Image 1 (cartoon, rainbow, N blue to C red):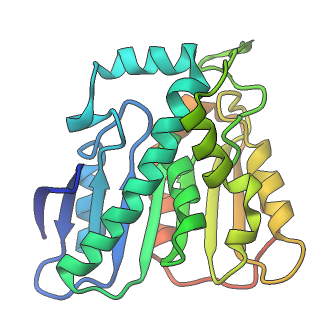
Image 2 (cartoon, rainbow, N blue to C red; image 1 turned 60 degrees about the vertical axis):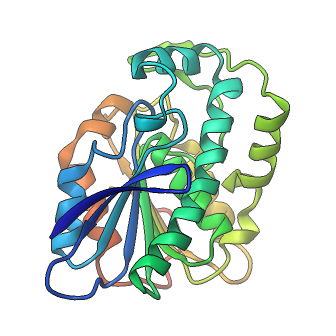
Image 3 (cartoon, one colour; image 1 turned 135 degrees about the horizontal axis):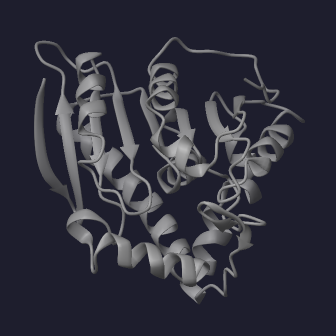
Length: 266
């Protein structure tokens, strides 16, 4: 296994390559708000040991692309959520599709392409699958398909509902075109999705994940989608629980599943 930092266009990426054999496929893993491509280096290395080309990216305004410290960006997002977050989400979705183009070409891979992430990174991974049919499996932890996050509260303060403010014109355009919950038709294909949500998470409420699964369980061409509830877990616990992350990653690179469309509970 070898690691390499490079840039794909404007996007800094961290590649972990399997040693001694061609990669079985590509996994793109996206960090949460305030994170960077190095945050999950150990997990990328683990995926490489399992035979995958594992790629972490810096979302817009993160890591090498940061225009301010991570804690200052976090505060800005919490005080002007739609103005700040929606351009980060939508822009990084588009960036991730370009990274997939480049990584498959550079390494001569045909697939499969798998995607995942935590919190904001999971939001991006789910939206990526909606615009890029090469993505066949998605694992998202503490994430949502609903960019409006109804009832979102501050982390650790479940009674403090955030005033999300108004979106910019560009941010609204990105949400209108990329948000998964309003484009469920894009997910009606051979696709498997796992959404791990905290039953006590009021920052990224799990209700939208269940609603998404219910919508996709109706009608033709149903994808496989599992929503895994974690009783008693809030947002911080979900984002930092190594067992949750291990289970999600094991599922992501494990055997294919088919025929499951209803939400499940753990």
